[in-house]
Length: 229
Image (cartoon, rainbow, N blue to C red; front, side, top):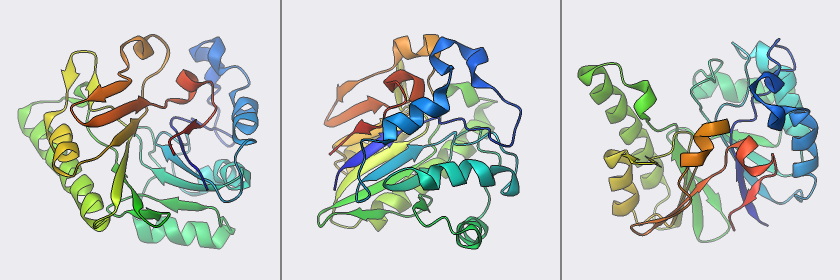
């Protein structure tokens, strides 16, 4: 059993949102995803780091989820800034059950065991692009910190692997509240997405303090899931 991650699938089977308008890397990106996942085994786990579908509600993402469910391995999904279909865990879990999507789970205020000694943790995170004034920013980052800490606490004594949508370090930008949690809970690896095209130039891949950071945006890794473990 191996652990993988990839972000920003930006699927649109039921929405008129062709991604090739964002550059040649996105041409036939669904086929690239299918090929990229073909190396995974059914026992492998892949975390999808947000921006899954352009659908606006759960019915609107059904065909996108059907595609995801048909890919090899177990998929664990967290929220991205474009996932406007995201709703309560109760409704999303019922949606999976009603449609028979048996290989998909959600990461939201929880943690998923991986093997005997590790756990998958995460949340959307926060990024400077979302800044809308000091009071709004404080409220939103506090919410994301609470969600990430709830996830980390749910992992107990297991070694913690964190998955975010927004990168906590990007160029000269730092999100100190998120980085503090990574330090406090001794997180060894943190994967994030969100970045595309020219912004990938400033993606941080490497060690910051005691955490290894990886950018796993789909177009940044050729739409092939990045192996973490």
